[in-house]
Amino acid sequence: MNINNLIPETDFVFITIDSLRYDAAQELFLEDKLPNFKKWLPKEGWEKRFTPASFTFPAHHAFFGGFLPTKINEKITPRLFASRFQGSESTTPHTYTFTESTIIASLENIGYDTVCIGGVGFFNKQTAISNVFPDMFQYSEWSEKLGVTEKYSTAYQFKKAEEYLNHENPLFLFINISATHQPTHFYIEGKEKDDYQTHKAALIYVDSQLQILQEAFEKRKRDQFIIACSDHGTAFGEDGQWGHRNGHEVVMTVPYLEYLNKKQK
Image (cartoon, rainbow, N blue to C red):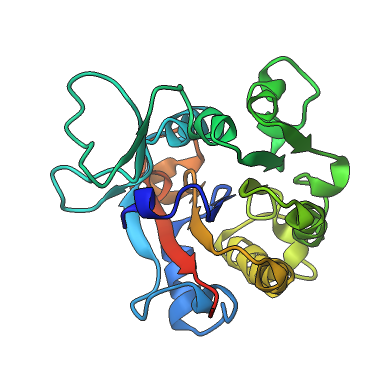
Protein backbone atom coordinates (compact mmCIF):
# COMPACT_ATOMS: atom_id res chain seq x y z
CA MET A 1 0.00 0.00 0.00
CA ASN A 2 1.30 3.44 -0.98
CA ILE A 3 -0.46 5.83 1.34
CA ASN A 4 1.24 8.78 -0.33
CA ASN A 5 -1.54 8.39 -2.89
CA LEU A 6 -4.21 8.67 -0.17
CA ILE A 7 -2.95 11.60 1.89
CA PRO A 8 -4.33 14.27 2.41
CA GLU A 9 -7.85 13.42 1.20
CA THR A 10 -8.39 10.10 2.98
CA ASP A 11 -9.21 9.62 6.66
CA PHE A 12 -6.57 7.63 8.56
CA VAL A 13 -8.05 5.26 11.15
CA PHE A 14 -5.72 3.42 13.53
CA ILE A 15 -7.27 0.94 15.99
CA THR A 16 -5.15 -0.90 18.55
CA ILE A 17 -6.96 -3.84 20.12
CA ASP A 18 -5.10 -3.87 23.38
CA SER A 19 -3.48 -7.12 24.59
CA LEU A 20 -5.09 -9.24 21.85
CA ARG A 21 -3.35 -12.50 20.99
CA TYR A 22 -2.91 -13.53 17.37
CA ASP A 23 -4.03 -17.12 17.96
CA ALA A 24 -7.26 -16.01 19.65
CA ALA A 25 -8.09 -13.56 16.86
CA GLN A 26 -7.37 -16.05 14.09
CA GLU A 27 -9.28 -18.88 15.76
CA LEU A 28 -12.36 -16.68 16.02
CA PHE A 29 -11.99 -15.69 12.37
CA LEU A 30 -11.82 -19.36 11.32
CA GLU A 31 -14.83 -20.11 13.53
CA ASP A 32 -16.71 -17.33 11.69
CA LYS A 33 -17.35 -15.46 14.93
CA LEU A 34 -16.05 -12.08 13.75
CA PRO A 35 -18.59 -11.09 11.07
CA ASN A 36 -17.82 -7.36 11.25
CA PHE A 37 -14.04 -7.63 11.26
CA LYS A 38 -14.46 -10.09 8.40
CA LYS A 39 -15.61 -7.16 6.23
CA TRP A 40 -12.11 -5.73 6.54
CA LEU A 41 -10.07 -8.94 6.62
CA PRO A 42 -8.64 -10.82 3.62
CA LYS A 43 -9.91 -14.32 2.95
CA GLU A 44 -6.99 -15.80 4.93
CA GLY A 45 -7.90 -13.83 8.04
CA TRP A 46 -5.59 -11.88 10.32
CA GLU A 47 -1.97 -11.44 9.35
CA LYS A 48 0.45 -12.72 11.98
CA ARG A 49 3.13 -10.16 12.82
CA PHE A 50 5.78 -9.35 15.42
CA THR A 51 5.10 -6.38 17.70
CA PRO A 52 7.99 -3.99 18.48
CA ALA A 53 7.31 -4.12 22.24
CA SER A 54 5.76 -6.29 24.93
CA PHE A 55 3.49 -3.71 26.54
CA THR A 56 1.34 -0.71 25.66
CA PHE A 57 3.60 2.27 26.35
CA PRO A 58 6.65 1.41 24.20
CA ALA A 59 4.53 -0.28 21.52
CA HIS A 60 2.50 2.86 20.87
CA HIS A 61 5.56 5.08 20.86
CA ALA A 62 6.95 2.83 18.13
CA PHE A 63 3.67 2.76 16.21
CA PHE A 64 3.26 6.53 16.13
CA GLY A 65 6.82 6.88 14.79
CA GLY A 66 6.03 4.43 11.99
CA PHE A 67 7.36 1.21 13.47
CA LEU A 68 4.27 -0.96 13.01
CA PRO A 69 4.28 -4.72 13.67
CA THR A 70 6.61 -6.47 11.22
CA LYS A 71 5.93 -9.37 8.89
CA ILE A 72 6.88 -12.91 9.88
CA ASN A 73 9.71 -14.49 7.84
CA GLU A 74 10.59 -11.24 6.09
CA LYS A 75 14.02 -9.70 6.63
CA ILE A 76 12.84 -6.10 6.29
CA THR A 77 9.18 -4.99 6.36
CA PRO A 78 8.72 -1.83 4.24
CA ARG A 79 7.06 0.83 6.35
CA LEU A 80 3.79 2.54 5.46
CA PHE A 81 4.88 5.76 7.15
CA ALA A 82 8.02 6.87 8.93
CA SER A 83 9.59 9.73 10.81
CA ARG A 84 12.64 10.55 8.73
CA PHE A 85 16.05 9.52 10.04
CA GLN A 86 19.33 8.73 8.35
CA GLY A 87 20.08 5.13 7.46
CA SER A 88 16.55 3.71 7.63
CA GLU A 89 16.48 0.46 5.65
CA SER A 90 12.72 0.01 5.89
CA THR A 91 11.79 3.31 4.24
CA THR A 92 10.92 2.95 0.54
CA PRO A 93 9.61 5.28 -2.19
CA HIS A 94 6.11 4.13 -1.15
CA THR A 95 6.64 5.19 2.47
CA TYR A 96 5.00 8.41 3.63
CA THR A 97 7.95 10.10 5.34
CA PHE A 98 7.81 13.17 7.52
CA THR A 99 10.12 15.36 9.59
CA GLU A 100 7.93 15.37 12.69
CA SER A 101 8.46 12.72 15.36
CA THR A 102 4.99 11.17 14.97
CA ILE A 103 2.42 10.51 12.26
CA ILE A 104 -0.01 12.44 14.47
CA ALA A 105 1.96 15.69 14.31
CA SER A 106 2.68 15.25 10.63
CA LEU A 107 -0.96 14.83 9.64
CA GLU A 108 -2.04 17.69 11.88
CA ASN A 109 0.45 19.94 10.12
CA ILE A 110 -1.12 19.20 6.73
CA GLY A 111 -4.68 19.85 7.84
CA TYR A 112 -5.93 16.69 9.55
CA ASP A 113 -7.95 16.82 12.76
CA THR A 114 -6.31 14.33 15.15
CA VAL A 115 -8.47 12.44 17.64
CA CYS A 116 -7.57 9.98 20.41
CA ILE A 117 -10.27 7.77 21.94
CA GLY A 118 -8.43 6.35 24.93
CA GLY A 119 -8.88 2.99 26.56
CA VAL A 120 -6.33 1.42 28.90
CA GLY A 121 -4.52 3.22 31.72
CA PHE A 122 -1.82 4.77 29.56
CA PHE A 123 -4.55 6.94 28.00
CA ASN A 124 -6.58 7.89 31.09
CA LYS A 125 -5.03 11.36 31.58
CA GLN A 126 -4.87 10.87 35.36
CA THR A 127 -1.07 10.95 35.74
CA ALA A 128 1.90 12.46 33.91
CA ILE A 129 2.68 9.24 32.05
CA SER A 130 -0.95 8.69 31.07
CA ASN A 131 -1.08 12.15 29.49
CA VAL A 132 1.84 11.48 27.13
CA PHE A 133 -0.26 9.96 24.34
CA PRO A 134 -3.42 12.08 24.73
CA ASP A 135 -1.30 15.24 24.60
CA MET A 136 -0.10 14.27 21.13
CA PHE A 137 -3.59 14.85 19.71
CA GLN A 138 -5.75 17.91 19.10
CA TYR A 139 -8.70 16.12 20.69
CA SER A 140 -8.55 13.35 23.29
CA GLU A 141 -11.25 11.47 25.15
CA TRP A 142 -11.18 9.27 28.23
CA SER A 143 -13.62 8.38 30.98
CA GLU A 144 -14.22 5.31 33.11
CA LYS A 145 -16.83 4.22 30.57
CA LEU A 146 -14.02 3.89 28.02
CA GLY A 147 -11.69 2.00 30.34
CA VAL A 148 -10.85 -1.59 31.17
CA THR A 149 -13.33 -2.08 34.01
CA GLU A 150 -16.38 -1.16 31.92
CA LYS A 151 -17.95 -4.23 30.33
CA TYR A 152 -19.50 -2.20 27.51
CA SER A 153 -16.48 0.03 26.89
CA THR A 154 -16.28 -0.64 23.15
CA ALA A 155 -19.80 0.62 22.50
CA TYR A 156 -19.00 3.81 24.40
CA GLN A 157 -15.69 4.19 22.56
CA PHE A 158 -17.20 3.79 19.09
CA LYS A 159 -20.08 6.13 19.89
CA LYS A 160 -17.59 8.72 21.13
CA ALA A 161 -15.56 8.28 17.94
CA GLU A 162 -18.73 8.72 15.90
CA GLU A 163 -19.10 12.25 17.30
CA TYR A 164 -15.94 13.30 15.49
CA LEU A 165 -16.93 11.89 12.13
CA ASN A 166 -18.93 15.00 11.29
CA HIS A 167 -15.72 17.06 11.04
CA GLU A 168 -15.18 18.51 7.59
CA ASN A 169 -11.41 18.14 7.72
CA PRO A 170 -9.79 14.76 7.09
CA LEU A 171 -9.38 12.80 10.31
CA PHE A 172 -6.60 10.88 11.96
CA LEU A 173 -8.76 8.80 14.28
CA PHE A 174 -6.98 6.65 16.84
CA ILE A 175 -8.86 4.25 19.13
CA ASN A 176 -7.28 2.08 21.82
CA ILE A 177 -9.72 -0.78 22.47
CA SER A 178 -9.75 -1.58 26.18
CA ALA A 179 -12.16 -4.54 26.25
CA THR A 180 -9.53 -7.16 25.34
CA HIS A 181 -7.22 -6.02 28.16
CA GLN A 182 -7.77 -7.69 31.51
CA PRO A 183 -10.21 -8.01 33.19
CA THR A 184 -12.17 -10.04 30.64
CA HIS A 185 -13.87 -12.58 32.93
CA PHE A 186 -17.20 -10.72 32.80
CA TYR A 187 -17.62 -11.58 29.12
CA ILE A 188 -18.52 -15.16 30.10
CA GLU A 189 -21.26 -15.49 32.69
CA GLY A 190 -20.13 -17.21 35.87
CA LYS A 191 -16.41 -16.75 35.25
CA GLU A 192 -14.45 -15.19 38.10
CA LYS A 193 -10.97 -15.27 36.55
CA ASP A 194 -9.60 -14.29 33.15
CA ASP A 195 -8.48 -17.04 30.82
CA TYR A 196 -8.02 -17.73 27.13
CA GLN A 197 -11.75 -18.26 26.60
CA THR A 198 -12.74 -14.97 28.25
CA HIS A 199 -10.06 -13.28 26.14
CA LYS A 200 -11.74 -14.63 23.01
CA ALA A 201 -15.17 -13.66 24.33
CA ALA A 202 -13.96 -10.08 24.75
CA LEU A 203 -13.02 -9.91 21.05
CA ILE A 204 -16.43 -11.31 20.08
CA TYR A 205 -17.94 -8.43 22.05
CA VAL A 206 -15.69 -5.90 20.29
CA ASP A 207 -16.73 -7.27 16.92
CA SER A 208 -20.40 -7.03 17.86
CA GLN A 209 -19.97 -3.28 18.32
CA LEU A 210 -17.80 -2.62 15.27
CA GLN A 211 -20.85 -1.98 13.14
CA ILE A 212 -21.30 1.35 14.98
CA LEU A 213 -18.03 2.55 13.49
CA GLN A 214 -18.54 0.93 10.10
CA GLU A 215 -21.94 2.56 9.63
CA ALA A 216 -20.52 5.92 10.68
CA PHE A 217 -17.75 5.57 8.08
CA GLU A 218 -20.33 4.98 5.35
CA LYS A 219 -21.93 8.34 6.15
CA ARG A 220 -18.60 10.13 5.60
CA LYS A 221 -17.85 11.58 2.19
CA ARG A 222 -14.20 10.60 2.55
CA ASP A 223 -12.55 7.21 2.16
CA GLN A 224 -10.86 5.62 5.19
CA PHE A 225 -7.53 3.86 5.32
CA ILE A 226 -7.77 1.54 8.32
CA ILE A 227 -5.09 -0.24 10.34
CA ALA A 228 -6.24 -2.55 13.13
CA CYS A 229 -3.76 -4.53 15.17
CA SER A 230 -2.79 -5.50 18.68
CA ASP A 231 0.00 -3.79 20.56
CA HIS A 232 0.99 -7.05 22.30
CA GLY A 233 -0.57 -10.33 23.38
CA THR A 234 -1.38 -11.87 26.75
CA ALA A 235 -0.01 -15.04 28.36
CA PHE A 236 -2.26 -17.32 30.38
CA GLY A 237 0.36 -19.54 32.00
CA GLU A 238 2.22 -20.72 28.90
CA ASP A 239 5.73 -21.76 30.00
CA GLY A 240 5.03 -20.15 33.35
CA GLN A 241 4.32 -16.72 31.86
CA TRP A 242 1.32 -14.56 32.73
CA GLY A 243 0.06 -11.28 31.32
CA HIS A 244 2.49 -9.27 29.21
CA ARG A 245 5.73 -7.27 29.55
CA ASN A 246 7.60 -10.48 28.78
CA GLY A 247 9.07 -11.89 25.58
CA HIS A 248 6.90 -15.00 25.18
CA GLU A 249 5.71 -15.83 21.67
CA VAL A 250 2.04 -15.30 22.57
CA VAL A 251 2.92 -11.79 23.74
CA MET A 252 5.18 -10.84 20.83
CA THR A 253 3.03 -12.13 17.94
CA VAL A 254 -0.03 -10.04 17.14
CA PRO A 255 -2.91 -9.89 14.65
CA TYR A 256 -2.78 -7.17 11.98
CA LEU A 257 -4.94 -5.88 9.14
CA GLU A 258 -4.96 -3.05 6.63
CA TYR A 259 -8.11 -2.07 4.75
CA LEU A 260 -9.02 0.75 2.39
CA ASN A 261 -12.69 1.60 2.84
CA LYS A 262 -13.25 3.18 -0.56
CA LYS A 263 -16.59 4.74 -1.32
CA GLN A 264 -18.32 4.18 -4.62
CA LYS A 265 -18.34 7.41 -6.59
